[in-house]
Structure formats: structure tokens, C-alpha cells
Image (cartoon, rainbow, N blue to C red; front, side, top):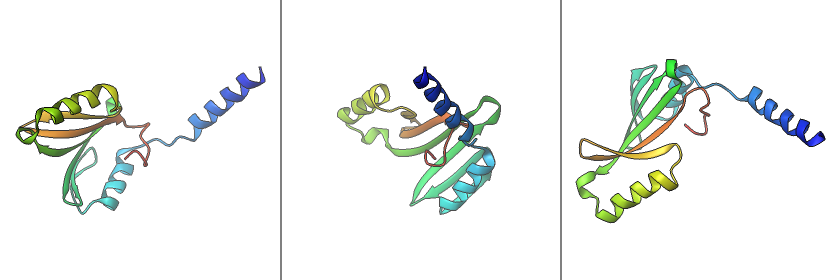
Length: 120
């Protein structure tokens, strides 16, 4: 019994101290780390170390998506394409790989409120 209450107490404590991510907090983080930034709360385009990044949030559905192009899809060999698909299934949790407009993209999808600064 003691262990059950102890574990439940730790779980409740962790839930209560978790911070809720918001568009305002994301805006502050992005403005702090980016070289250039455009957009407004809920949709940003910015550059970090010459890497273009896009972030879109949906507060009503508690979703956040950060995407960044990696390489032209036509430049990938079959092994790299297969490795991306295998990673999507086995090892990538919140990060996935996607193809759009002949580009391989890195896609980080996460519930917005539960997102931590470290994850961003």
C-alpha cells in the first residue's frame, strides 16, 4: 500500500508542476534561438544556422507541428528512403519523415500544452 500511494503521489506531483506550452512561450523561444523570424503566434517561419524551419500550432486541437526540409527526395538512394520508412515505424516517436514537393522533410508533431522547452 505504501508504494501505491507513493507512486500515485509522485505522479500527481509531476502532473501539477508540468508547465503548459503556449503560442506566447513558443514565440519567445523561437525569437531567442532563430537568426531571422517571420509570422505571428500560431504560425512562424524562421531560420537557425541556415536551416529553414516552419512551426504551426492549433490551440483548439492542442497540436503543434515543426517541419524542416532535409534534402531533395530525388537525391536519396533506395537505402536512405528505406531507412526513413523504418525509422518512422520503429525509432521515431514524435519526429517523422515525410515527402512533399520533391523534398524529404523532418516533421515533429506533439501536443502543444504538454510540450516542454527542452523538446522544442
